[in-house]
Image (tube, rainbow, N blue to C red):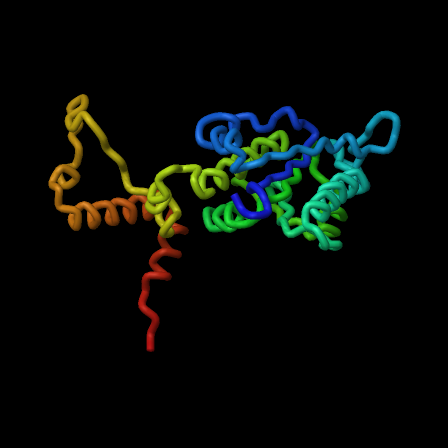
Length: 251
């Protein structure tokens, strides 16, 4: 927890009841209960101005579906920024927190970006619905568009939960053993090596002998080789990047 308070994520959504959801359990749940983390939700519909509390409308140019209105989103975001200013005495402009829009067309979320978000004060997350959000409000707020992968969800809320889980587990004191994350997938640009535990012989399948040898140098070499082999087979893009970084610079 920083001097300014716990790491805080603010989620703008039409379904605030979806939070904390799975984050109310296990490590994230303990962090929430201990007030190491705070998850705030903003109901976007509260900022609608008509008697029907409309948050969307038909797209200009035609097409199926509805688009979330820029004026409603803008008002919701302004309420968050004004709250941030009030918490930071003497600050009269903006928010020090990144604003992310969960979108299938966004930049793929990486472990490096997760680490950066976890090291900051906490993000503001916009969860879209329907056909998405009017482009003008995304541009006006210079939002960072983030994607979990090449598929489409019914809304940004599940993606927000995943992003928050990835961040929260990295916060100081959440995992307990800080070494736990040191050798995970992506921590060094590779996918993680296989793990084994008791029994040493299960259903005719034995643990690789090197792991029982007690030779830590050999174990480290085996794990590195396994990580490289798995990455080469499953994520050749990561392997190419890893090999490029590993090539000594020419004089």
